[in-house]
Structures are given as C-alpha cells and as structure tokens.
Amino acid sequence: MSSETLPSIGEMMSASVPMVRTLNLEFTETTAERAVVRMPDQSDFHNHVGGPHAGAMFTLAESASGAIVMTAFGDQLGRAVPLAVRAEIGYKKLAMGPVTATAELGRPVAEVVADLDAGERPEFPVKVSITREDGAVTGEMTIVWTLRPNK
View 1: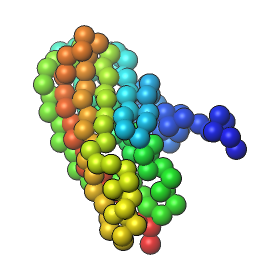
View 2: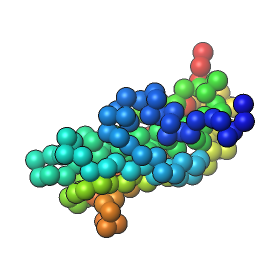
View 3: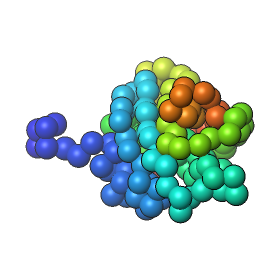
View 4: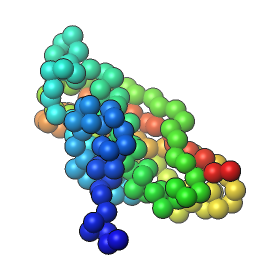
C-alpha cells in the first residue's frame, strides 16, 4: 500500500479514540517533532464562564501529545505500546472560542528507540501549549509517555 492511501494520524485517531470524535478535534499538523490540533468553539463543551471546559482542554492537549507519539513511534508498535504515564496541566488565561494545542517531543526519537533497543522501558516528555485564536497561551501541559515493551 502506498503512503498516499494510508490514513493520516488524525484520521486514525478519530477512528480509534472516541473522545477525538466527540470533541470534533482537527489535526492540522502531525510530524515526529510537532503536532497541532484545533478544537472548534462548541457550546456543548463550555464551562460556567462560556469557554471550553477544562476537561475538554485537557483532552485536546493529550490528543496532540498522542498524535506526536504515534507519528514518532508508530513504527515501534510491533514491539511496544505507547502509554501516558502522568500529566500536569496549568491553566494560564481564560480560553474563549476555538483553541489550538501544539505539542513538541521532549527527547530525540533515536534516543528513545535506543533505550527500547537496550531492553529499557523509555520515558519521554511531550510539552503542549494551548492557545486562543489571538495567540494568547491559555494553558500548558507536560505529559510523560513510555513505550512499554510487548512481552
């Protein structure tokens, strides 16, 4: 199968992660170094002040981190399962309207794979910035992922 017929990471995540579909997340960029995911403004997911609910913003950021992990380590799925280990989020400013999460991998892919090759269970951070349309940072999240070797 040619790469032109393979589904995108966004399509694969939409098909396999129900919350991605529920929140209508849009994957606008997915590379091994960066993933950008947008959540449209949806009144069904507003909080008490009219912006996106904190849980929806957490899911947006976690989904962006998952997209980068799948792009960077998708070729390792035959021998390891990517799992989120822990996450920390800080809400900085009021989010209103559509918001965008931009995720960046915190360790080089080759370094993580080398740890896996050495029989280790590597951990690596993904840093995510959540912004409003005006560019203001409304939240920041760090998610630590692992590649758990298959037994």
